[in-house]
Image (tube, rainbow, N blue to C red; front, top):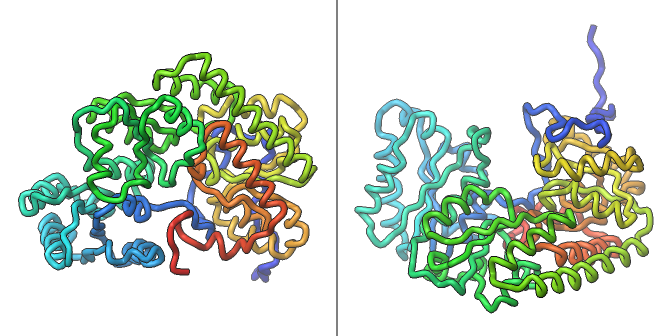
Length: 453
């Protein structure tokens, strides 16, 4: 029997109650949907952080479309080139030769020779077992003044390591060990400019040391100065593999202080970093007391303003959103929706505390990758008046709820520590008072990047 299908049917997946959720991966992982909230950076954006560099993508034409459009939207097309693969390249035994000759042709045609060339190989090269080391070695012999960096555009391999994690390794691959400067601290791993008021930057300032931040580098020589850093600091877990390799290569101390919202863990991380920087325990305790007071005062002020307004949070805003939810709940905020497909394993403590409280059974967890979630925004538009009573933290939460009141932030926004709590409170206040053009804002690729749109 033929059944008539109507697009008005409710096809949005049923959310899971937080209290009934199977931590840490509550949803089936299969065919994935990518919501048109495009603020999260991709490998093109990240590679552009290296000054005086040029990107070369070697892949099939269908794959080229996305990366080329990213560069075009950034107004950075002059820093990108490509070599299109053909079917016969898979069996003619000339895959490495095609990469070498194509890259050499591109370099020779450039009006100014770059200091660094990022070569991105694709899934086809991995399937064939392409010898990337041989490619870069031969190119280095041909162009000794250029650093050639191995990069990958292989989303089919994401089960082993995410494309973002792999790109973070490539981002610092050209950095070479220099004479050690114990007064230089490199903050690595974030695509975004580190807020100079963040707890990390303030602690480094208190210690009298200098900060290396890739977003401050105006030329390639300044980028290479990371090789002299006596200490490397990272706070996003996606950087762990990169920081581990880099610290070994440079013989630098690596301080891992994840961006968290669990008060105990925040204090432990601030102490760890402060003591590594040579600060006294008493100075660190005083710093924590002052920063915590400012942060919690800001939260309480915003809570008095927005009252019981519903809060929706998504995983692209901050890495530990269960800890963030717990913090907001403790201060009386009405967190009702969480948009995430899985959670960090070390967030289990926050999960257990929230559900053991017994007061938060109304919190619902929605997937973002489920293909049926493409209907969620359609329903949100139909009930826009109701959903505009929701305050979202993150672009995907704003998209799926249809609200115009949202905190526009991705990947932590360069914030850290109690200052992140304070700044988030201020952004929530702004979001509550001033509605945004959600569709226009979240359509821009790469939060904080230039856009031709």
